[in-house]
Image 1 (cartoon, rainbow, N blue to C red):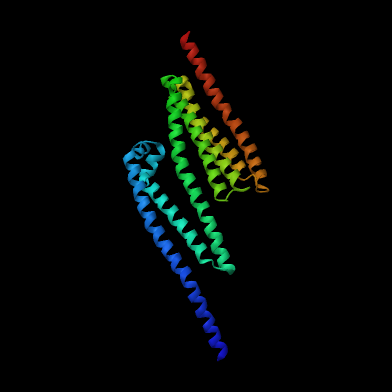
Image 2 (cartoon, helix red, strand yellow):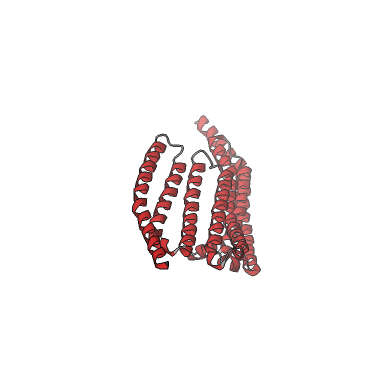
Length: 282
């Protein structure tokens, strides 16, 4: 009985000693929540009044946000609110000063939360900045090309957008400590595929505008180029997986043979049309 009373006494003493820290942590959390809410709403109103949201809504990313039901001012205000609340959570965990394995886990989570929010913030604000920069440069380079070659300017703008988005993703993943040997090839593969699609669309349109005789085979050319960039991108994505690269290499050889066979009738048709046009001209 004496031992039980001693244990209960020690538990009660531990709880009493921990009460000030628990109350302080709760107060910090409550203050953090209310301050975060107030500052978040203030930032929301500021973004709305400055006019950034109207300009953003006209961009490609802005239209995507709007179609998804997202609002830039609410998003930025929510991020600011979340940042302040996370800071209050980190401070509350430090005040509690919990020991043992559970305390170590809590400290690890508290240390990682700012990195997680920072990575999300980099992705969101980075995407907004990249979209603005790509559109700005696209408008600058468009006068450098003839009016009927606007697709080349769009192609260059899209390539810049894809490259910068890849950089933003890598920076965000590094911040969140999620980068590694698997992530880099994955991003590289998708960049190759995206850039290949943009290049193919721009080049095929430019060629068909100048040479009408190629319109009939433009679909075949697009398909072949899409497939080539898809194979290259897949090779980059699975480069770290043993055995997969050999499979992709075999597929590439088979595709190259099929491409060569398909080119024979296409080349014959184009040559035949060109001869007919020359005969008509004579």
